[in-house]
Length: 177
Image 1 (cartoon, rainbow, N blue to C red):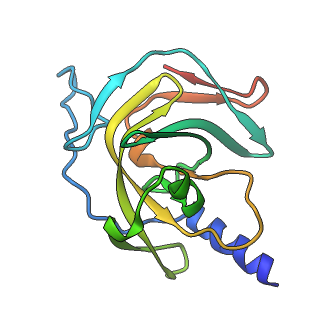
Image 2 (cartoon, rainbow, N blue to C red):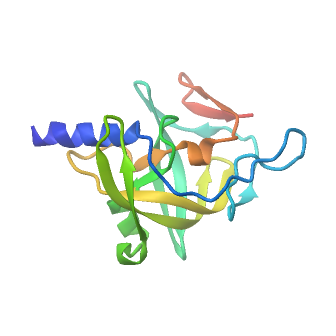
């Protein structure tokens, strides 16, 4: 029962609508040439259309992502989740990045069903998803409870917003447009 409860919790987080305080978007106007997927303080450092190899398990798409916090870097697998407003990592990943939670901003998020979860927000130095990289990106750190998951967190719309892509489930790649 405890394992099922933990799995349900992580699934709820996966389809959550995180309540977050975020800087205003710097969405560009149509034809302005400005990047429409940035938030204030974020910077794109690399961008191309090279496809990205992913792992497909059923309808789940696990995306290889590189996270950098200060001088620490880890490679993780994040679940592509277009229903998550923010990108989430679990505390084990935060530990690997040597993030000190006592210096982070505590946050509460509301998941589907109305439950409130607690975690904290940190700003990554860089997040790289396939051929796209952004600097100064805020992510949420939440504890993972229950059986081990096959992924390290969620890749949410805060990173995916403004990117055009399609998933080829048969070839197991993301095609960036």
